Image (cartoon, rainbow over all chains, first blue to last red; front, side, top):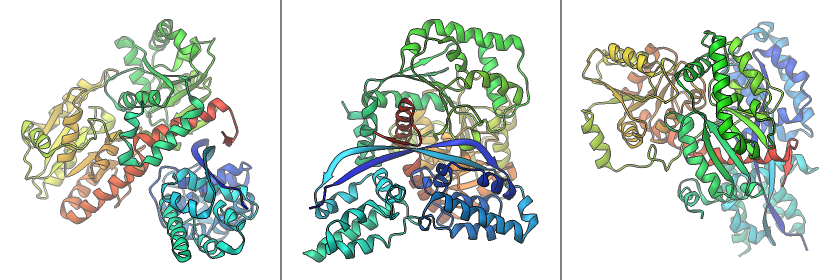
Length: 219
Length: 412
């Protein structure tokens, strides 16, 4: 018998570091000396739970800055393809971002000196996690609750989970695994959700659809 | 007990309200004091009028105090405001001494309350020195900057910094405004209240009444800018932009509506410049409105075809948020928080000159479908990001974070 699923909620608050980069060289230099994992994490993931205009092309802040402020489309494309979910640690992710900036400087020395229209401001975030005291005994019970989950809960169980779970997955799939093979198809479907190119609202809709269709199949 | 909060549920969703209640749990009974320099006029006062009762409803012992001063004090703080927004004008040591003396006088009245509070949130430069005179304070003190301080005039900033660096944290509307400090620099954009008189839905009769009262023609396009008569809002540039656009044919009417805040001594001067520029043009309506004319402003925004906010410097630009919420595309100055809200071709256009504003007015008046679509996008954008409930959530998160004095992860 599995433990009930504990619905947890969270809220993020952004904190500016007071540092900025005006061009690629400064950006590279800052990233080389950024040992706070929270900064890279915020610029890849934190934006999902922060006020922003959804830019479907450039989900990470580095790519958005390259496109909108440096007007360097080539660099923006290369940064945009980085999927943070594919890196085992934030440090590996940071190294990859650094590499893309280095490549660009090697390709075109002039590009590294181009001044951005607006600087890149480095930020990190603080996360406040709280227990909703809501315990869900079975996946069937969870199905009815998903459409009402707060965006904070979705962030916690789907995005923040990647920092907490060794496999780098989401809490829903981890919990479903404990029920044996019964929910294998549902887990596979959940794992097709690209958390990076969906807003949290879309993510909730996708989850609700998958859970509901699994229940219908069972009927 | 929870009546006010529940009124927001049909707009933002019940989950959002529930989230607020949970976040407020660890803050029950805490004494939270906000301090600013005016109860009427300007975005800060508007936000506090609503935030304070909501915090109380959530179980916090929240209150709002103001520092009071004479005309010399406001002259000094206006200069500070302008200097933070890059105006290279120094302030005499006499004025600065007076500024500190007025703050010291205010402390005599507020000391017990401030020193007993668990959290004190001090808004903008006017009351910034209060902390210096509250040596026996027991709570956390936060300085909230509502101004575009991205490139402050250094001598003035250096003076203010000596007060601000003593705070436990500071809050800015945008990361671009945050100046390095030895404490956390939180980023919290402000918000609008969808249930306030300024933003609530109005019936057609009320809107038409305002149209008639101010002699506007509902059959012709209306362009408006709602803001204080302040040079940083560039009202003269707005008149020029509309004249340039009108020269291409559209029978535009312009409404420049605003008032003055109690703490702004330059308003009269700027109003005179605007009136002179308008030259009795019957299609330019310069309206000086009282601070409580919220429903009139609401109606003018709803009557508008396009809303302008052509600021040269802007803290956040709540008038932009208000217009977007009413489904109006905004042509805004490429400055401060307007950049966060006006996304080119999505919610409006960013411009740098009266010529740029004229071009975009012409574009929108000639592309009615785009104008409608942008209006819809604009409303949803505000719904998801800039309503009071999000603002309150971030304040509560910050308070929990700062009271717990924890690292990047706070588990309650």
